Image 1 (tube, one colour):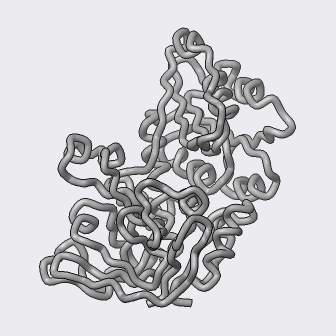
Image 2: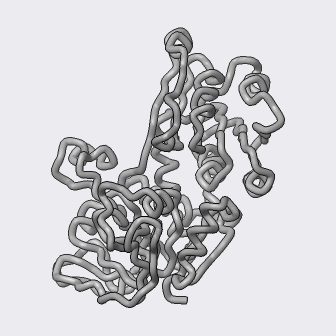
Image 3: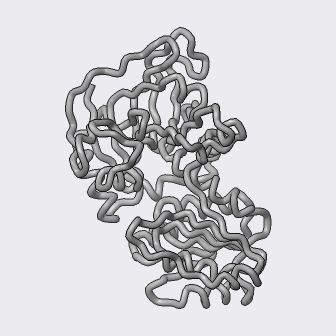
Length: 347
């Protein structure tokens, strides 16, 4: 088969490799669509302790099951399935209690488990037994289904801030996650959604999602404006979907008493530490949370929301490339020219 192989840092080449070998307990997926994630870009440039080149990365995946081992019951021949990233080990305290994204081993597709920038990928026993593998119907496209993985991460983030009926939420960062969170916040009961962004191109895309307020961080005092939009109290929930330490600080400064902050966007290793007056948290009695990844139930929820049309992905899918142009796909994401970029391995 044809695959994009990460040979070393900064070098991915498309080449012919052996087809995955399927045993009695595994299945073979024909990869129809795989989206480029920001973590793929970080692995490409900086590596990851769980990724050992030469290997195949990629984890936002949808495809068709074309071969099934005799012991496999999770999927059947011909199933259209979405596949996510985080795979619980199934044995540790965290995995046994439904919190596999906190597992110390932290298995993931496209990390220790070969990923989906390839025409075919194996779904090994562990992925089929414990992982995010969700069948979906004909009404959902492969491109949309591939985005169940980042949507699942968004669901995890908004669950952790107890978003519920009648609350106000500020989303800082109008990338793909921020845009999907606009729809997701509505589904989860938010009565007012306030979006903060910088670039006009991404803000224009975000406006297709119909938030109540859009604020430009280049032109306005974000904290003051968000307080103004919430009657001076501050928002009930603030989610930072961009990798900025200053935004993390602003989120804690603006959140309401008894409100929640989710530091969704991770920071680079060279960023300065966040500087927060702890008394701000103390006297507000606010809650500061982080979130990363998701668990299989989030992935299934994401697929069902996409199937029901509750979360729109068409506005954020801006580019599509064949596998032979995977380096151009990566460059499009890195340059911020594209939002979600989809690779089609069989084109």
